[in-house]
Image: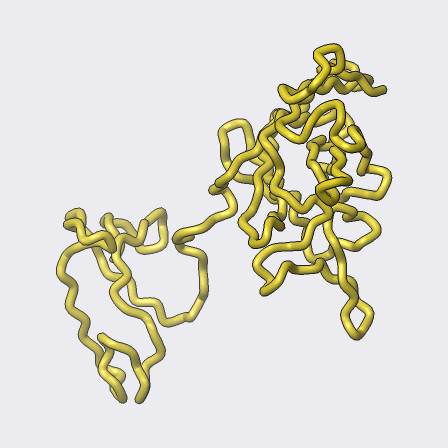
Length: 255
């Protein structure tokens, strides 16, 4: 059911979905089975049960031309558990969050929005064309036919990642060369270390040289939130942590 008096398909919006399905002996309700002649009653309300606006018309589609109408529930532009975000030189907003996992393994997510907050694309997890050589963030398995696939945690609920904990709250940055920088604490309890990941914002690649240990043993910056700031010339990256034991070491600079 579409509102308006113009020809169907010219800017009309569907306000009520009355029925759909294949006719025949197994036709679903409210269609009559084994009949090409069909009658469907409409109560004059939209999909939410509200009274429909005046001047609506009914459209019958027989072409089986599938089109996206709407997304119900989850959508890539809706984010929970935001760990941090940064604005790149191009004005786009890069949002880091931790997905849901079990057993402490939570795959990080990195998505891109425009300056108005409209979702554009996802950088991490990577696309299906990803290869182990360029995606150091994830653990990989080999299939019996030799293909590399991201390792999955238990029942496939989350990707195995080299950072076994969700990203802590932090202030990431985007460099002028197009790399999103964020940190994570990885390793066993007695061998913890804080690692800097440098993600290429074009395709989500994280090569081996893009993973750098910042704080072995988490002795200087601790294991909690870490904040970063980038110098205007992209030459210096500054770190600050509220959990640093020595106040003299609260700020570090790396060329």
